[in-house]
Image (cartoon, rainbow, N blue to C red):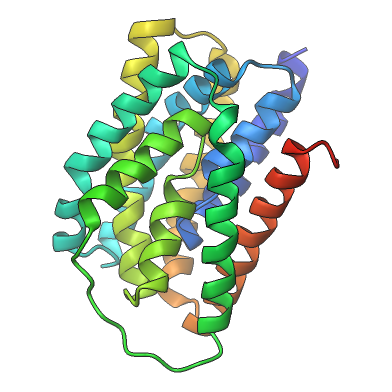
Length: 249
């Protein structure tokens, strides 16, 4: 019964947001994996996660702003394409199965994770890359809505690979994620309605508790170990997705 598992949803929300707020990824993937394991259809799981994320990403954005982790220019360039991609992806998921895209996205992320790990062992200048942000924001939000997660792994990992400063990247991507999540949630509510309020509440409470802790962590963690962890996390999630998709696990 959901009632007896409420505390586990709080714990899951806390852990997911702690990872997401510190590293800029994996809230949606962590929470969606849990809900899919409980038997929720992909569209319903994605709708539930995005509803909970409206609370957690809002708190995360405020926390990152307080710790000075947000680049205004990066935030502005990602915002509008992210919103458009989120609405488009949510609508597509309510009409078509989203599983078809998973192996292709997982393959892309596996490459990005490997590149991040390799780059962590060499010195490279931090650059504020401002090109191709519109398609990146749109694509990241599109896949996030369709797959129940993916905004952080796609956008954060791509920007880090391209040389953007890790603290500003994580903070800015998390701040934009609030608006991406809100756009997805509104689209899901208008097309599917919304249930599972106890799950949403548990995930939201856990995420709200973790948001300031994760933002503080992001502003303090050294770059190299953080990049290694991000690269390993992205690669591990991608490998698991591919193995699961092809029936190995």
